[in-house]
View 1 (cartoon, rainbow, N blue to C red):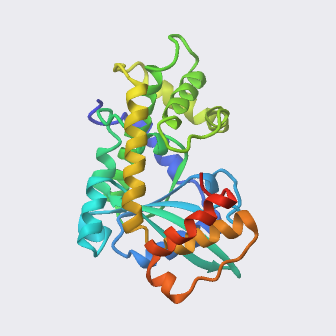
View 2 (tube, helix red, strand yellow):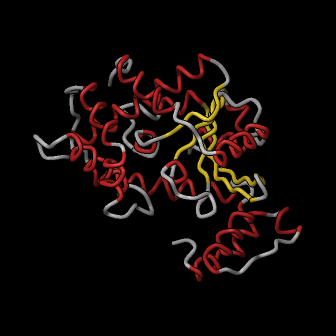
Length: 293
């Protein structure tokens, strides 16, 4: 593990994190910040940074806090956020007459940084943030530096895992692609076979330069079979935890049904007050309509 990412790599990552945000993503980040005024940083990532319309997809955000106490007022939820991070929440806001929807994760900045390290076997965190992200909000220069260092470490960890997976002598693009293919297989719902190649091709200059700046690090042995088992087990644990901590789950389920079936669902006040039970009641319709798999 590198104690500190190379300064040149940190500068490259900082430049990518400073990418401009669409008006929709900016509006949603501002809305989430209004709900969590103690946030140290907010990162945007996912499909809406790749050009997918916000009418077609949820906006994905990561909200990072200085301490556990800021993640949730519920002590049980705070324990869950530490044992099986992150906690996941749902939010809606109206922008320019349109309803925007967001799924955002919440964890502490120290825990976020810890999960980017090379000795973290499960790629759930570092594989996500070796992909394009944007810093939508940061509270101060210290928090910014810590986020840049954590994301830079994610890139290093991802590249080392990719080097352990690709045939020796592979071009940088092929190495990154092979690494992402393996990390996708650790998820319950892996991406399509072409997704890794598309990701690397769309960000070819970044990955080429990152590989050059990282150089030739030590390459640890990697058992992707074990990591797939661990990753899927952790995904199940997160789903179980989400049944008790996913605020707004009923609204999210109703939107998913409408999006996939065209049938609008009006939630009752009882369903909004009891999102866990309502979510379970709506689950059969989600499965029937193919909204979740």
